[in-house]
Every structure is written in structure tokens, then in C-alpha cells.
Image 1 (cartoon, rainbow, N blue to C red):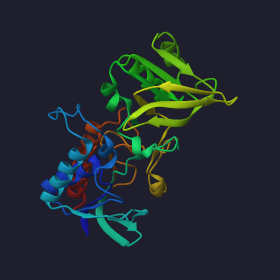
Image 2: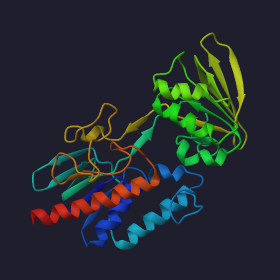
Image 3: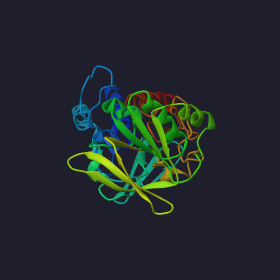
Length: 302
């Protein structure tokens, strides 16, 4: 039996592994694909303390190597279920099951994509799913945001302070996001609404140079842009654990800042939990908190 089983190998899960191993706990980290999480796609990180410039891939590699050096066990298996047996937990994968005194769910989220041809190949080369992460790289350029919810409106407002122009593309004629934010956007000279429209084509050579948008009547317009920020929603990776943890209406795990869930010994950390800011620095902070709380829990029940 492990002391701590961590589900998810992104920044939150990897940081939790570091803290747990420094406390001499037996740690198993389960990752479905590859360690690093969403940050791997970041072309350049410049807002993480003490790292002025580093690529997401390099950051993830350093974090992974640090976890390995501390001696955490890593298995590449997808957790499909967590069972609560009271004084221990069981994590089930397609290859078997593992038991632990505690479990930290650090599964993150999946960005909802546009589904336009070439989208995946242009991530980090003009396409981004995080305006606060990448907006500064497009300073004084022309960009577009796709979406109409609160995140899309807030991203547009944030970008309007950095870039020369922002197109806000939405498939309907009105936004479901906050009216107050919409009013602020209407006051900006460098924001243009492109309504009743959707992106139908990405234009690129080595990088994104523009998009084609089509309205409901089939009229096509080409927008010359350097960056496209996709804000059409996120899918928290909590579906497999919904029977144990409380989720909000968007599917994010409900937990306080101590990362504890309603199940004793079960914690959540990172972008899959309810929080105001989803950034690299808050993910690593969650990992540290969740591991520390797990260590406290183990001491309290021994």
C-alpha cells in the first residue's frame, strides 16, 4: 500500500509528488499520457517566479526529472475509478488497481477545441487557449478571440490592453457572458465584434496569419491576425470520480483552499478544481498544499 497515490502528471501532480517524497512518503503517480500536462504546449513561459524565459516543454521536463530524482514511482495508466474503503483508497486502471492511504486527484482539464482543420498543429504557433498565459507575446499585434461566455469576454478585455486590435468572434448575435464586461468591451476602440459567425478555416504558413469566418448566410470574411485565442470552454477531467466528489455545474471539483474534498483522505489539486485563477503558479501551489494536507491526514489516522 502506498502512502499517497497521485492521479495526474501535470504541474500540480508532479509538485505534489516532490513534496510527498521530501516527507519520505511512498508515492505512486499515475499519468494517462505523458507527464507535463497542458503547460507542455506553452511556447514560452515568462510569468513563473525565477524563470524569466522557459518553454513549457523544458519546464515540464525539469519538473519530471526532479520527481524522478526524489524517487517517486510513475506508471503510465489512466485512472478510471477511485473507491473509498474508509481507511484506504483503491485506484482502478485498465491494468489493475492500487491501494493508498490517500489519493490526490490532479487530473486537470481538456481545452474544448474548435474542431477546425490544422488546429492542433498551430497550438503554440498562433493558437492559444490561455490569454493570460500567452497574451503578452502578441503585444501591439492583431488577434482574435473565439467564444461568448465569461472567459471569452474577460480574455478579450485583457487582450485589449495589450494588442492593437481584437476581433471577438461568436456564433450567435448576443453573448451569454456578463453584461457589464460586454459594456466595457463596447467602449474599447480596438475591439470589434464578429457575431453570428464561426471560424471555418485557419490560414497559416509556419505560423497562423489569419482565419476565415462565415456568417449564418454563408458570407465569408478573412481576418488577418497573428493570434487566435480559443475560449469555447474547458472540460475538467473529473468524470470518472463524480460518484465520490462534489462537482459544480461546469464539472469542476468543489474543494476549499486546503484541497480537501468531502471524502477524508481524498484531495484535489490544480485546474480540475473550482478556483479563480488557473495558472502554472496556482497549479504548483495546489500540488504543494494537497501533498502537505495528505501528509497531515496520514499522521492523524496513524
